[in-house]
Length: 121
Image (tube, rainbow, N blue to C red; front, top):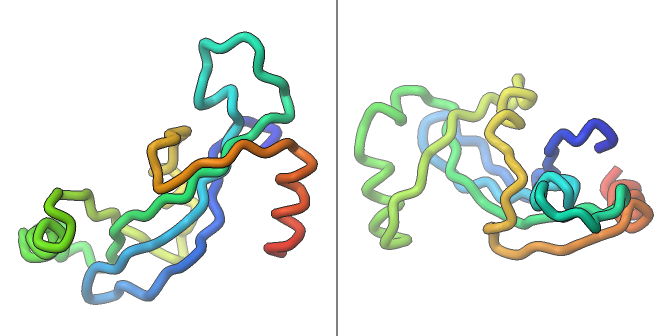
């Protein structure tokens, strides 16, 4: 977190070897990363955003319309499907960014964030 990198805590994930599954996670990033033009943000202010994405471990899924259409039928909107390899989770982190448009967002201090991370460990 001190480097300014965006990280996440995965809340729920089911293996998606042959299909598409929804992954729920909490993205954690500095408030400064979300609002770079704001001058009055302290060094110890962070945001946690609850979000979800659709993931698959099968690259062939990404080349058909079947699962995209199923997502549209359920949500009345198209969402991207991300490739996820649990053995290379560091690659999944490249998809993350400092957006606050997830399900919900909370502002926390460094001390509060440390407490949350200790509870998850």
